[in-house]
Image (cartoon, rainbow, N blue to C red):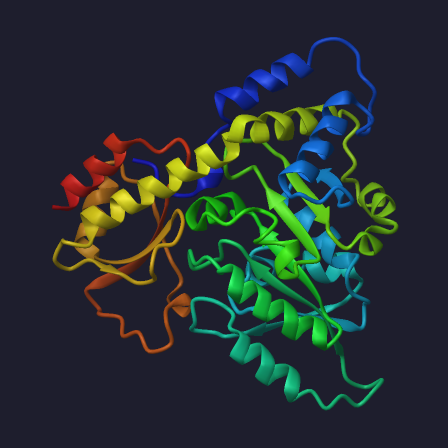
Length: 351
């Protein structure tokens, strides 16, 4: 019963088969291979944007931080949610890659960053140039760190506010596929048509071994990106191994089938847990993450029976949430590899 993270699942069989096939023979290096070239065209087709610029890297941190370094100046700030991955889980990599751009976090105690908060923050900025740092970008996570999915309308509102003040909009899409599967919106509707300038699309959490994409819908921001990727050590010599993963991941809607399964397993957990006494589902479940309050004795028992999930930080709870001393805050994540039997066994044990 593994619900620790979707990072802990391996790769899908289709992706592994594609890697084995791409491994045969000799091929051009550094992304000049046929697999990488095909993968770029597939991305452009999926997003209905023939002019977008696409770059492959192997980690989400590299994707986010390299993208942000192309979007802001070292003296600017990057606005994000208080629990954003770039703020809480990427060490100080964003500051390192951007040359010092500061992260400013907003909406602590809320499930997502709201247009109301962003508008209020931007309207209060009476900048004393050159003494005050200048906002340069807004970053949102889709699906986000509380398992929430931004609707197309919410993204559009945030983008309009950001663009009106000269900010660019970055989307951390480590679980973007889960968000698309959850809402039914098209990739284009959820990104550039809503105002997203740069998307970091992750496949590593959803069926690939290590494959992330930096997609520039605003091509001007991509200027010099190939040099940024190279000088930071993120241009892989055997680029075909990234291209092959991406090509297989998108083929025949495979990426959405994997994400849909993960989401369905999360909802199966919700249905089983919501009727049990003493269990509180803290945040609404929009994708494949669940945040729960469980009795501490139940937590210990479940873990003793082989259930894998993580204790979670109380500071990420809703602002007005009261924690009972008898309960423990935990996170559970489902993946494309989660089975119905795992879910049912977990619920049965908890009963």
